[in-house]
Image 1 (cartoon, rainbow, N blue to C red):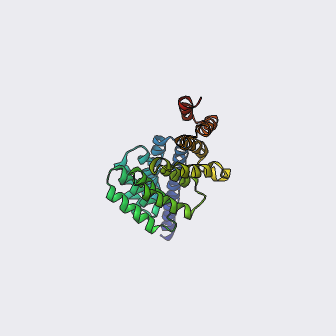
Image 2 (image 1 turned 135 degrees about the vertical axis):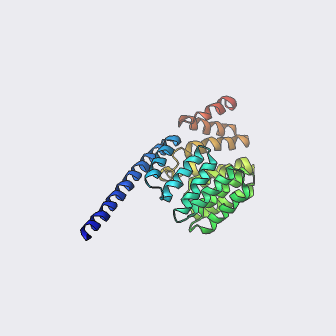
Image 3 (image 1 turned 90 degrees about the horizontal axis):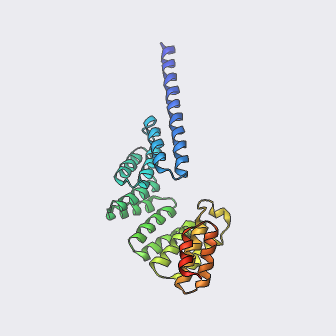
Length: 245
């Protein structure tokens, strides 16, 4: 009897392991599709992963992220709530929930979860950036600036934070000189810092050109736009045609 019982439990372990392996395989396919900006395909794969492992909170978190990219915000909210039920809640879940509520125009809930993310995070750098983006969209530029500056204090190597602050200075607070400082920092940074955002130098060149143009330094603006175009930013072509001789 004990032999059959042991054999039965061994079979369950093997079956469970096979399901986990299959789930992990679909998750890898999903990650690869996401890296190629194929959000619909990534979503299909992650749904297959969930079918074989429904209680893995990480998978529901990714599904929520992909649904948000597809602007299916109600579905994204449902998935993030399932993720929270099935995993140890982190500031990332709270931040994502806050962003979803923002897109659903439920701003009180959005700021509630942003605040919760910042309070619960061991390192609130990313949560601060998320709230800064929300404040920026709401044209609360001073609050956005305060949040992103705090995130830079926590991690001075996150180039996206400098880019966001440059945008706030340029398009929000109308402080073009400050914006040039942040965009220049990105352009002149070590290439190792740019691996996470490979196109950030091109974008920073384009934005710095706009800042120079606002300061009526057209030659410097055109030089940045031409460099951006040479690096593959086709949007810079229109700026050159419109404003450069």
